Amino acid sequence: MRKIIHVDMDAFFASVEQHDNPKLKGKPVIVGGLSGRGVVSTCSYEARKYGIHSAMPMYMAKTLCPHGVFLPVRFERYREVSKKVFDILYEITNIVEPLSIDEAYLDVTDIDKNPEDIAKEIKEKVYMTTGLTVSAGVSYNKFLAKIASDWNKPDGLMVISEDMVPDILRPLSVSKVYGIGEKSSERLKKIGIEKVDDLLKLSEEELTNIFGKYGKEIYDRIRGIDLRPVETYRETKSIGKETTLKKDTDDIDLLSKYLKRFSKIISSELKEERLYCRTVTVKIKTSHFTVHTKSRTLNEYIDSPEDIYNVATAILKESKISQPVRLIGLSVSNLSRNKIKQLSLFDSEIRKNIKIDKIVYEVNKKLGGYFVKKGSDI
Ligand code: TTP
Ligand code: MG
Image 1 (cartoon, rainbow, N blue to C red):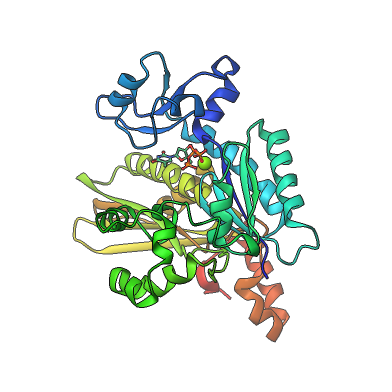
Image 2: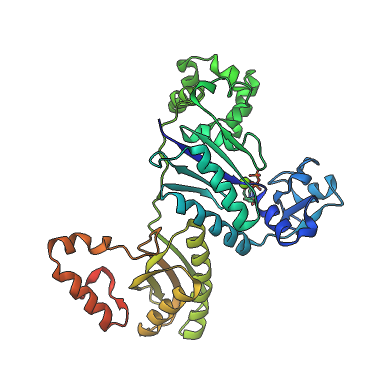
């Protein structure tokens, strides 16, 4: 039997705001887009009493709770806190699947400790490090662990063991079942199915009629069967941005400005995915529609906007553009969850012939820490 933990920060953006400004503690705090057409990102539990929730139009939230504290979103700050939380999770195990900025699964099957104690340890460490509370759910698969973390939010800790299933699921709304979205819930409601208890009465065939090929999965899931593994790596091969310029240009300073902007965006995306990159590629399309791409693979992993930008501008300055530029793009690849350089790229070659390791090293040294993509110089 596996040991899975699901953790989810409580009212994340709003809690960060309350932590950073303690005067806001205990108050209805609503974070989101404050402009006319803005929506609520999240709100504190105090604000939820007024019926406010994520994705609600901001004007509606203001009507429901006129005396609330309305704040804009500070992504950078939330990312910083999120990183601290994930650092704690990665200290426990490498088998972490980030689901969003404030949520993750951990597979702690191979850790020789009671999973409930591990969950307690996470809660304590998160509180000590960030001053914020996180809810945790412990069970033997992802579906049940997530149901458990949601059980007594905020600051919850719940264990769902095999003997509690399916009774614990019976009273839940069908929308809590992974795989049943808003539309399906609506459809089910129309035929009088609102709770998991109602779903349990349907045969596998009936569920297949409703959900197609997912019918069997849902049949199993509501009986506590979910074999999905905790996936540590989502296949992101590269992250990039490009733009067609309003006017063709050969102004290097202007092109550098675009690279600076792209570097910031790419860096944020890397940080959000907790990834580092080692290859930076600049793409240029000239006014004659010829496309040039030039890459540089670094000796170490980077994720900061400054580092990405420095490599990108170095590439740009080296590429002697003879025609005005029509499109400029920047992308990063060779992604990894670990900052520490892994030998994976050359691993097999090293195993085959240890000498190659030395050549790589020398080439790196010669190029001042850089070497050309795909080891083409080797
Ligand atoms: P959630 O974990 O869904 O919500 P939450 O942490 O605010 O509250 P809960 O205690 O119920 O977990 O989302 C995490 C953050 O993601 C949330 O603080 C703000 C952001 N978010 C949005 O910006 N828009 C949305 O629609 C949702 C659902 C979340
Ligand atoms: Mg949350």
